[in-house]
Length: 492
Ligand SMILES: Cc1ncc(COP(=O)(O)O)c(C=O)c1O
Image (cartoon, rainbow, N blue to C red):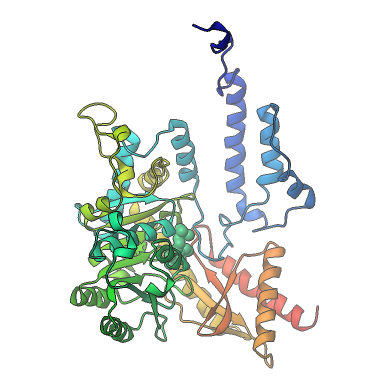
């Protein structure tokens, strides 16, 4: 052996484990104590605040080359990171559409990282728990136990997985082998004009092109117009296209509108189409005893995307896709490689979970969902959904009753679209005023709301997906908008 070329074996081999476990134990306890206070006092902090220039500069520091004590590393996190969050765990965060997380879920994420399993699959407890949480999602949606599913990064990925299966099943050719170029007639997918942007990204990524996703106009309640959908399908068939899939939305991102799922399920049967439900916002209404009827028909879908990091408030990220036909699901992704073969005993003697999606290594996402569901029980999550809906209708009433406010869309679930409307302002000035109110609410740390355009009208948008919101927060929102509105129209 060439001794000059043999690796140098030092006496002190290195590891990332701490040299002094008792030191790190004390610091870890402090991190947990700080975290609990951080969460307990969230209401006392601003919803959002701008980072000072000095803090921003720290994020441009170059790659660290030399060690730093963990105490100092943590001090930087405490000073530069923790005070400047996005804000979605705050009781007055209602922008876009997020969940507000929970302590148990955060502890679950910590324990998942400590246990460290790779959820690509295998015969171990984390993989069994992953499958159990998917089974619980099936149960919540009323899906049969024979269906398959996968925990993914969020709703966008859940929709992409489902649309991939739908494309492959409806293509009429072996898309995996021959590619989309082999499809004889151009495939057509249908959704309302309120469909979330992730579907466009998915359709484009699937090689079908944006034109393959036909947006069907929505009615006065912003639900897909089923008659217009029928007409579009007939038109496409006549033009030599292949209608493949209807994407129903259970809870649109603009206003929370829920398409008529029963009507779409009937239409899908009649037209032999795949029915996918994007339930990222509303699918979990199925666990609310008072509001489950709003998503009646969801169990008839071929696939559903739902988002535990929204109305189950799991810390980001976790979405879930369910596919009724498990063989079609596996058939869209499974690739058996010699280095990933199953065995009859031991670690590889269980199903490979990576065969149901795009990732090979998968994070241990299920523990945070599992722990919170075990702790509270599913019925409590159903009640929290009802609570958010009651709060949204409460805000709607406040808006209707207050002078100088206008509701811009019907409030169906937990999203309220409205604007501050003093007399005599034309459209552009009204939009500028409402945007300025929104920015001042953020900059003063009062509340985070976002904006959108519904039926051509610009409006502010409050999406209450938050287990910490109280009605008094909504009273405050209305009072603060009135204050800011008066201030701004007075030219301040
Ligand atoms: C209706 C709808 N679909 C899909 C998504 C995308 O979900 P995610 O942000 O979890 O990827 C969202 C996000 O808010 C949504 O509202």
